[in-house]
Length: 399
Image (cartoon, rainbow, N blue to C red; front, side, top):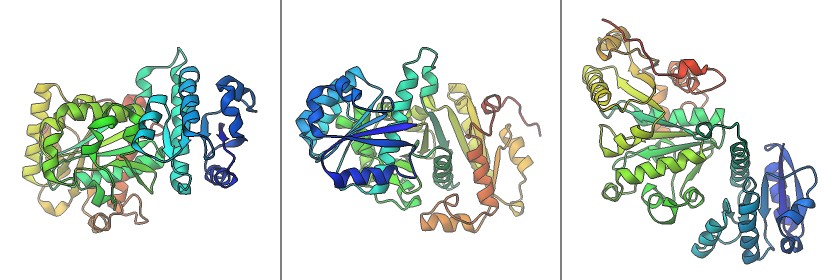
């Protein structure tokens, strides 16, 4: 059971934290007065009943300098406890908090939904760090799956699949999914999720965010469905300031913090896409039901196979499937030389949901396209798919 400790004398903020925890997060809350800050971490923990907490909240009424000094000691002596600071998010404050190992800096007037998300993330981080301290834990298991959603050609519904995949994974593991828009010139993740981001990827790969994951989180946009998004630059010209090295570092940062990193790439095989493939654990390949799209994907597989850049797990999605197109699923498989894993039929509901900015897996309509996309999500659900079935396909389809 997660436990929360808050150090504050402001009862209104304490009540806000209790509301965020109640009914949503497992665990109880204990409040300590600000005077305990001068006792040190071990003395503070001795006053906590019911075992070591997962999250320590330094609330309003605590001097920021004293809070940062205490957090720095906690980071050294008890790194498995997530510390959250309530203070104005100035540049100096964020820098001091980053150096002290504070996980989040929040406002005293933070909305309940946002506070609940931050507390959930803090609990998950504490659990991950605690698992990492045990000799039997495997470091690779603590790293998230990097899912590259790709297509050599545009117009095949790649962003629609990526946004729905992220929403579906968010239902499996809330607050543990981040969607990265790597179509740096014309990315549409913000539109597909009806978001108005304050920050974008350009800011996230430069400055303090590139060095510390806590600062990076300040540039992520929270979606109501319980996922995070890092959206594309506001101007296509900004893509010139992002190179493959930036992409590699960014994905590594996100994979260390999230269980699922869904990357919506640009069409083709540019340097950013290749950098993503070098780190991807899974490749979701989108193919339309037309000859140019099928041939393009076949060439793409051939090139990546020569470069040895095919992720170990492959998921091939046939989008806009329609019997009236003149092609069958068997025809597509014969040309690609690999099986089709997921078929998403052509649907009126899917473009409507995209235009509304509400992914179909988030809505109430459950037509054939919904079922197809849900099948893709299920391939990443560890409760449904045995590990042996998540390995790369080894059979080819012969015409």
